[in-house]
Image (cartoon, rainbow, N blue to C red; front, side, top):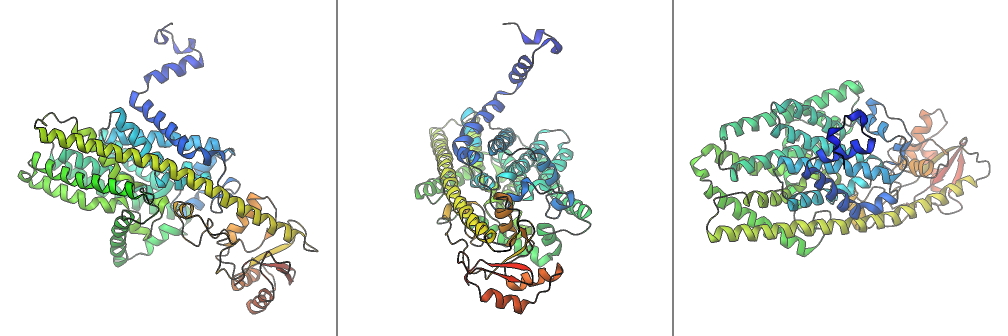
Amino acid sequence: MENLRSKPFWDRSPLESLADGYKKLPRNFKLCMLATFIIGLAAHMYCYTNMLTGADDAFLFSEPHSWADGAAGTRWLLTVYFSIIKNIRMPWLLGVMTLLLYGVAAWLVCETLSITSSVGIILVSGLMVTSPTMISSNFYLTSAHMYAGALLFACLAAYAYKKWRHGWIAAFVFMLLSEGSYAAYIGMTLCLFFLCSLKELLFDQETNDKHNLVRHFGMLFLFGGSMVATTVICNLLTGGNTQGRVQDSQALGLQGYLNNIVSSVKQVFDFFLPGTYITYFHGERVMYSLFLLCAALSAVLVVWLFAKQQLWKRPLGVFLLVADIICLPLAMNVIGIVSGWVHTLMSFAYLTPWLFFVMAVELLYRRPDLHKDLEKMLRWGYSLLACVVAGLTVLCGIRLANLAYTKAYARSQMTLADTTRLVERIESVPGYEKSVTPVVLTGYQSTRYPGHPAYEATNSLAGIGGDYYWEQSYCAPFAADAYINQHLNADMNLLNTKDDSFSPEAAAETLQELGYSADADELTAVVDALEPFPSENCWAWYNGVLVVRLFPY
């Protein structure tokens, strides 16, 4: 076969150019991508072949988004992400794009933590692509690539800061891009930095503590500067009309931030306690027991390496080690400082303990000074247990993903079936004209609708509580609009889609703003006289508006 390098690029076919480019890719990158796609498809194939959009992202395919729309909630890059996929309607392609970004992020993690062995690369790729956060992002499939992009930029920031000369400039830009995609994943940058610091303190036999301290202050200023810059960008794009996390952060005082710091650390420890279904242990006692054993051995390993490195002779090194261990739980949930609460979609950095396990195995086998039989036995035993824990975590993640997706699909099909019945009931009302007749959906939302309880794994992994669409499909009028007009394309003229609730009082206020004659007491009396859907007597005319009652109480 002719050597491709001997031919000028203009004489090569596209396939020859691709083959030459593939040969130039690093081996570890190719292995990382291969492991990501094989394990990722094993976990998420069902999701990518069955569109699992919920109320929160069903509208993303069709509604336009301006820069200000995304910046209102820190995601000022939202327009860019959805301009990329605005013509993609196949969940399979969305899944491939998401896995591609995750594969690159996994490779960056391996490079940042100096994980080069085949086993280590496969384990890191598998852990990242089967984490509950990855599963959670796929419940919002039309925006899953945005979360993957946020993760990629977060990992790029840590990689640039660690590997590149004057990399702090690039790291700052990547942190801005990550926060502009999905701010919660910036915790991954901090956790990777602290893991790199622990690697230098515990495993590198020659390290400069003063240089390490300077890098700590540098990362602190980069993180703070990127958060301030993100706030400024969002305020500029929205004209000061921010919402959500940006608004929350601006409203918090010193006491509020201090309270959130305490609650953020508490949430991390709560996450790793037994009995929480959304953790990486997935309710498995064996998994949790193995994790605890590996964590205990890691503590022993830290103490042993502390003595091996003679860190007590380096006061600055001791200070950095203690500071890293104390700050690591806060870095894992840094978004909680602003939001005060987190759900599974925000908690990618909770993967940190498993990354430490794999990194420790890799670096232990590089130390040339382990000569005693006890030291070799500790290295062998710890390595075996860490690989078993990481491997079982990957397998359980694959199982949990398929379990959650299949149950979520059944749940969404029930919701769509009930929504179809609702649309048919409304369209059968005498005098109803499609896309013309004004309709208001109302009721007293104290029970689930349509009435099917959620599956526990699905509800928890979707990152939402008992008042959201996987358990309570119509959590708010915007959710009803998404199911009716986006999923079913019913072209219904719903008036109260921007309201926070279905209450008659909120509906009456909206009608008044739209120029209709409405009174809260009168509308409440009308709703009270109706029976909830699916009863035949679930609708009534009120001053030219079709009022439909959804909830029984």
